[in-house]
Length: 60
Image (cartoon, rainbow, N blue to C red; front, side, top):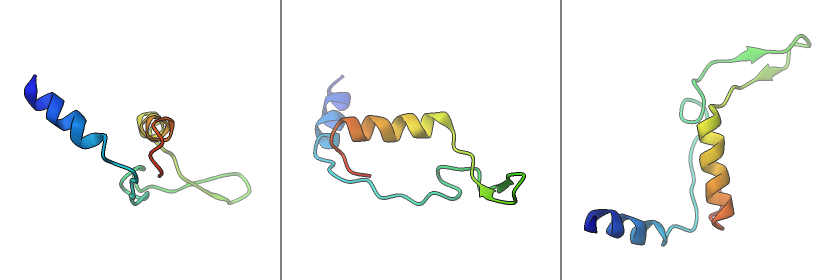
């Protein structure tokens, strides 16, 4: 329980998250539309994580 409290206190200090996208938030694959446009598929949980950060005033 004490360990979780320490982690939460450290996380409260985070103000900015910088991350790569390809291979980190995606599977690294490419998908193409009918028009030949390159598309990337993101996991819904990654999107939820970014949304949680933004709601807590953490810039991404």
